[in-house]
Image 1 (cartoon, rainbow, N blue to C red):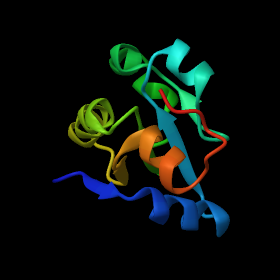
Image 2: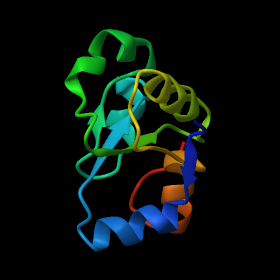
Image 3: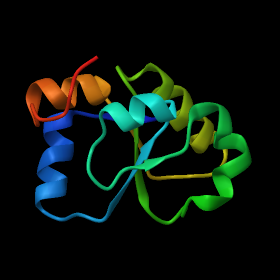
Length: 107
């Protein structure tokens, strides 16, 4: 299966509609502490294989990173691990800051 991209505008609309999506941030702790989307959960990419059991495979998971590269790697890993509702946030936290929430700092 191919991982689907989700635009930041699509994610914003889903969050405003209070859709039940799990926001998985795979950046490093320093990046997460500098800028993040409310209610997102940090599991750095290099820790994901050892922490995949912490994720609920029945939920829709949107994977977030800085620009969308690491999150795509993580989303593909989850897809190969049997998760069926995984989305990559296209453009990452940077696009989120530019298009949805300018209070989120850019770096």
